[in-house]
Length: 221
Image: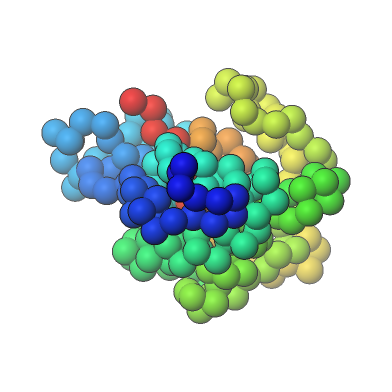
């Protein structure tokens, strides 16, 4: 991204994003490193072990450059304007996987209020509000709440991430989730600990399905 200024991404960088394409896990969308894997119904190790509470997950691209730097600028360098072009590309990924992601409502993963105040915005909501217009799906920002601050997930093991997220979310009393198909939206899927806890509590409160859509997915090569 040497030719890009902060908050402005050149067209060549957008084109250089490594999209997650087949073969990938039919449930969580994890991109298989080996192209010898048949994508028809193939499951990753995590899905075979039943690790995830959500029904399906898909991501736009792999969490590596230049997408990694674009998200870093968006999230940590106070460039919420990048939400619009990211949401535009996310909408294309949604349409490509609409058969498993179709939803009645979009639920952005919430930040704790002090972290949102510190950052100035919630990246998941910024993505959601632009994405919602393109996908023509309502977004409910306040139905899922983060009830306590959590440690930054970077650097934590899978088990530590899971414990860090345990009990960190709640559903608003005003939420009407019964028999609703929900699309949980966030910027990055790393181990899935945050998304898993969100899906668990949403299903506990009556959601019929919870699918996940993220801009990026960490692929371990």
